[in-house]
Image 1 (tube, rainbow, N blue to C red):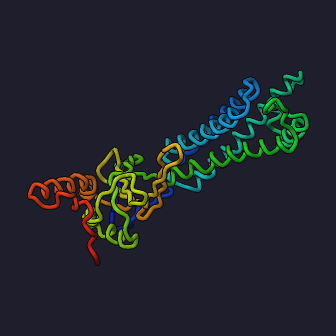
Image 2: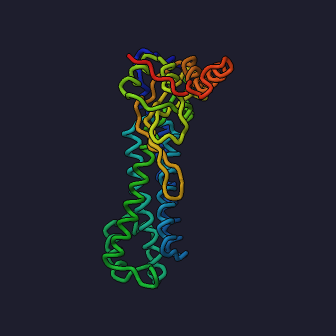
Image 3: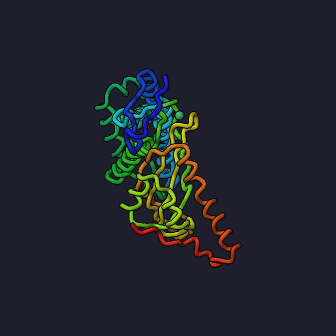
Length: 318
Ligand SMILES: [Zn+2]
């Protein structure tokens, strides 16, 4: 069954809230199994490969990132467009992955001390996990600059680890999936092309109004800018890879900054968030830069505007 989307129904794309029941159930189970394996792997590496100082921080970050990508990957695979379901899976997977890492770690430590107890027995008793953690804390488990880390310092390290892992595993998949678009006509996630066009910053209300009126030549009038321009408007296009029905336009206020190593970073705040446009309109936006360049070449060929003043034509006033 195909549904042809009715563009007049709503101006902006929003997730339909659908979560296919079979796919979502499989994805949830897959996410739980995957994070449990990741948690166990993390614990054993922590225990058997003694990581110190900066490496242990990087290792926590790698574990947190792996957990986040796993949850994101399975939810995307299951085509979940429901943020409540996404949140539930992310939260449960985050807690499970961290908990399993503790269980596996304590189990391995007990075995090193010749205490034989099944890993499932520890898993079923969170209170035992807690008491063991308290005991381990008084002795310390790792050293930093040749000094054992224990007590409050170790509690802080564990708290940092828990916050990083839980925070990343919960927040990142929600953030990534919330910003995506799904084509309900044919059942594909849309491809996003970021920065298809960058134009001079201008009044946001007016920009939104013109975009809703599908007046894309207005962007041309604002003038193209280089991607290093400190504050400008960035246009992103979403396109369904499977059919010609879904095209969306997002405009953001992009703030560009450089750190002391000269690395560029861009913060984007949405002005127009996934506005429905049709195929012809998407094509019009995509070809705006070429059209502008062509008009500049023509202008300079006819002897006018050799200084490229066509780049900065003042926006039309309303
Ligand atoms: Zn499609």
